Length: 617
View 1 (cartoon, rainbow, N blue to C red):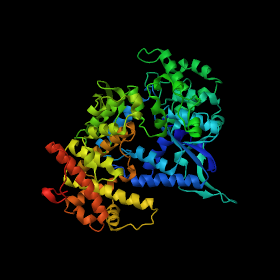
View 2: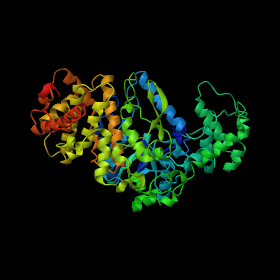
View 3: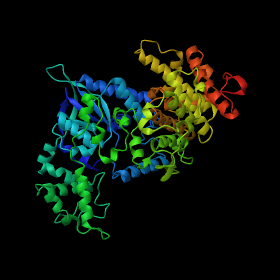
View 4: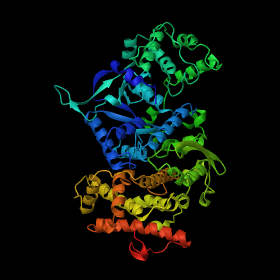
């Protein structure tokens, strides 16, 4: 997001800085992308979420070792006018294009990374908020109130007038914590940007920075795309070795230096753009620039109250476009325990589904979980309404209208009182959506009931029926996650054990060659998991929410599929640890019971063990 090319242009304005003992406002959406993409964490096999969790923990330890108090803001509400929607759509199509020509995992954030990130913040007790407004403005407003810097990689923060400055991620050396000379105080080497240094360097008034951003083109306005190319007066032709964007910025700043006020500069814009192309009226361009400039005005903000009082905004103070939110949802939304997508849905805005590494000759993995989203839409909007979804069809991003539905158990539920509905009703709605009965989950640990229920649904609805090794590998991955979770909860005081050692050795072999059919099957499972997590949150957690970082490790399950298809059996991997074998069989039995129930139409009954009845699970 932000102004294309500005980050590299502004490099010479940054100052070396030793950052320590301060509050820090962090752009959370930027942070989890930055930590995932700038580490060795796998992207091709659907994500190694435990490695990602480890990266997040290390990052916040580095901050606290330096006396830095982080406050993380995650984008939730975004732009209600949909001015950014064209940009978002183009980025989704670009990702599909990259994947279709073989750039598997090229800057693709795995499906559950955001959910893992929020859970880790909660476990670490890092203060964070999921913003129901446009996050950039709220971040800048809070930083100005608290007189502390912002950490992000969004070039829009070069424009906001934040007195304490802006720290770009690209120069934030959190893995290189140092000690100040003559003291024992740790600091993080980084680079600091301030609007004062920029305006001094380029000799322009700071209030002209939003005009600079709007004319240069940001996520809200682009004069060139509107048919208004800039026509520079009295400048020599560009030299062959000059970068066009750098020349553009220098000419624009030189032109702005003659003005003192925003309106004075805007009044002179027609001299730069003429009458536009294709007969477009200049007033249209000026109106767009004015709206683009408005995006850099700092609001009063609601985050300070949230962090100090842990309370949501007064419902009566919300702008009109947020009045669609029931009062009870405001605090869970800001705490990140409700999915931010409900804001878009209640505003009847289009939803772009995530892009993942898949076989593009098959339907998108999001198709498999669509019936789950339809129930989510039904609970929010009522039946017979529709939501516009954008998703991959082949190698094209296409739009379709998805009908909202309500299962039988949800017919009497009302959205504005959903949090007050009996637990038994909310649970029935959730299980009916997945086609799973409560008795199916008997014997499964409570914190794994949701993943097992999702797996039952996935087996029935996946495009191309998952074969035995795909299911076995997935369950073995859950066993691996459970062993890791238990060991971490004991802070490593318990020995690793033979099963964990065997599975880790598979991981250490390195990622296997990517099998797109396997990737596609597991992408569908993750889509089902994502949408079930959202539905479970909207229904106020009828099932316990699992620790997501331990549910899926892509490089391991892909390796396991190859091993299992080569003749290795689950028993041979689990035989040295009876409790691991017992967990595997409990999950498997629940899944087989669910499959038998659907096939026979009979209530769930006792299931044979993994070797009975000719099954080779």
